[in-house]
Length: 313
Image (cartoon, rainbow, N blue to C red; front, side, top):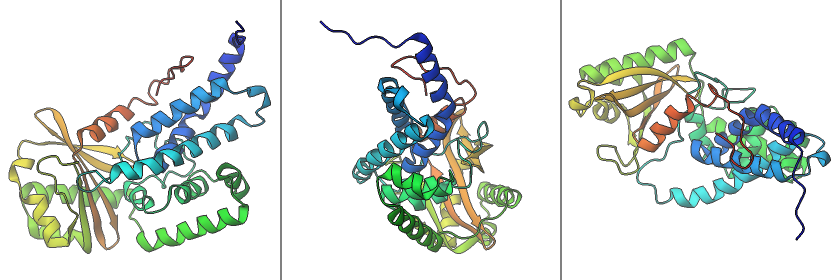
């Protein structure tokens, strides 16, 4: 019986060192493509397993190899995720990540991380999304992206250009961090006191409220449109705010709110705003997504080295 020779300890140590150094970037790519912490973690773990089995002596650029593997795997997972999300009850929102420990989640440009933008990215095909993310968030050159996606440079340029055009139609200029926090505080204050008029004054005419609960009781199962309806929804259940403990959090590079009831986290509130006011209100009620958010707080606080065959998140 022929047994494959085991890698030398020094080889494994070097493989682990390279992977750990790249891991924030790999998670950042996978998370932006997938909008899911758990799915991104699964992709990164699979890349680690592949990295162990690879003939690393033949790899010219470990970063390029790992980035390519991550991107291709994330695209595959995104394609199957589309089918799974067809059975999701109510609006689907990306899983927020706590960026207080690592504001850019491995990106060179952290702005391609906001929940509202990730939601718009869902309208692109997985390949378009990956090309845009590699270019705009991580500053990859077109030849590099073409090699990763196995397409021509001309085709990649067209994909990124098309994605930019489509996103520009959906996006609007955002406010700075101080104004964003002011609007968030004003929204929560008005909602807690039931001041519908004050709420409406904060909202744009085309404001939309999305509640991600996957069927949980109390979460709106359809998008709520217009200032009057959004304001009424935020104040419709006084018990929701009564005795609630509201804490500011750093969600995807923006200030958000975690709402606790009886000491347990019950919802995350995030907003998207422009100079005209708040144009998107996003409620995350899904307990699995809230748990994932809380879990990301420790992702970079303790970066234990992955074990051979069983890497840590």
